[in-house]
Image 1: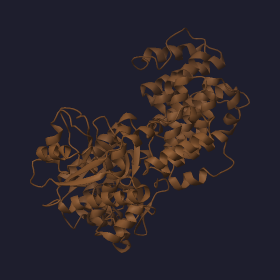
Image 2: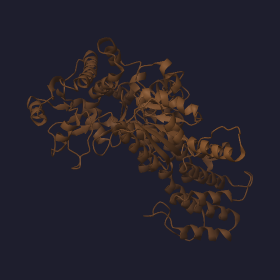
Image 3: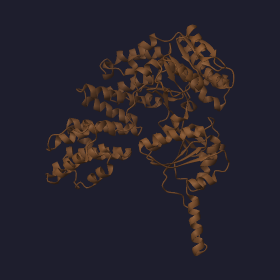
Image 4: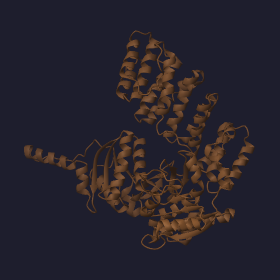
Amino acid sequence: MRLFVPPALSALTTLLALSLCLVLSACQSPPRKPAGSHATPATQDQVEYLLSNAETAPPREKMDLKLQAALLLVERGDLDWARSIINNLPEMTHSFVPPELAARLALVKSHTAAAEGLIPLAYSYLDDPQLLANREGLPSDLAQAITRLRAELLFDMALYPSSAAERVLLADMVIDNEEASRENANRLWSTLMAIPLPELESLAQQPDNSRDLQGWYRLALLSKDTQTNLREQLAQLDLWLLNWPDHPASLQLPADLQLLRQLVEEQPRQVALLLPFTGQLSGAANAIRDGFMAAFYQAQQLTGEVPSLRFYDTHQADIHALYEQAVSDGAQLVIGPLTKENLQELALLPALPVPTLALNTVDNPLGVVPNLYQFGLGVEDEAQQAAERAWRDGHRRALILAPDSAWGDRSVEAFISRWRSLGGEVIRDFRFAETKDYSKLIKQALLLEDSERRAREIRNLVGNIEFEPRRRRDVDVIFLAAQAGQARQIKPTLAFHYATDVPVYATSQVYTGRPEPKLDQDMNGIRFSTLPWYFERRSQEKQSLEKSVDGSPALQPLYAMGVDCFHLYPRLKQLEAVKQANFYGHTGQLQLDEQHQFRRQQIWAEFTNGRPRPLAEALQ
């Protein structure tokens, strides 16, 4: 099963406290609380105290004190001051700087770059051959801090196998620290779960891995490769435990795998589907049902063990009465309802009698309803993911282009909220109506009209001159929320108005779900999040659906949702029990939040030669 507890997006938070303790222990300044133990960040007086003592200290202690001050400033978020201290340290060659001091300097530089979001630069400071050659001889805490930060940065760069290798090294360093060992094992597991399945299959067969790493790869492979078959997964786990009795994971299995036996024993014997099978939403309901049934029949063929099903039409029905009827008929789990109105009715109840996987999301001011789980395909998750991806790729100043509609509002609000929380700047937010001419909007957004006005003023003063308009230069990324037809016009218009070099990140709506290279040629270069379903080649459910149902692109997300519902419902209690755990499905990576709503992380693709191509790390 594809479940893991993911590491934090940034390596800085988890490592600051340990790194600060390292530099404090090495200098002779008066005793004080180690950084990381403060209720609040270090004060300016503490920083100035360290810098004052450094002025009269011997060279090595001077360096230690200044590095300590720089780390405190990174903790405070005062990167300019921290960078100034680092930049004004005396130039020293490796032959002069003791390895321990050089390692601390590299650690401080890496922390500072990581705090600014400069992940590749941060990693480069810790990838120095001399530093790595000396790592075994460094004090234990310092070696741990460097190894841990290397693992985090490699994860942030999606270099998951290399990150996992660092985690295995770290495991030996923290073996006597139960809390640190458990934390590292959790993060190692999350790293392994992030490796795409085809790559994981290859890694599990490589003979040159260390034994511990080889065992981890094989455990991760069985977890991913059997996610849709609980009994098979449990059987494979028992076989792994038999073959790897001395492996670290045998002594403490990942939390999600510890629950497998319980999940197998407690599977519901009857499931009810409450959907609007007639009326305006019948097309959506039937597509979800078809996806669910494709997974049902596949499971029946493989295992012969499937629940009995009952179907209830919610169209024009009282949702409370219908729900009570389903439970009275013997339902031990409910899939649905689909509409927000029906879900809001159920969300007002103090509790539900059986686990219920609703196929929409609503905000519940009364708090979490026990046994109610919400799974939707809202655009908000995609917009937040676009912000995270653009930030990870090094962009900081965003221009927004979105439709003037409720859907556009939700997209933009989600993007802006996440973008600003990361530290990004929103330059402008431009909206468009239904139109076939986006030239005026884009000229306004790129300040080309201002450039043209200045040219006219100059011509009035000096006469006819050659002129080429210049777009604004304070934008390094564009977030585009648009349907495919709109995006097909907006992207070439951006190119026409001198913005070819500005990266464009978009939500899944820019892709219709069907390759149309002639129509999509002008969208080359757009990066967008999308469903793994579109690039799935192994799924028996998808192959079955392609032969038996309407292949309309508009229905594909709903088929994928139905398939995921079937594989997700047996895991509900597991996902609830293992906090921040993820399930990898056809609609994306699903995580249950504190409100019992599933948050989705889709895969990333890019238009190339008019066709969507998944990015390298995309397929799980």
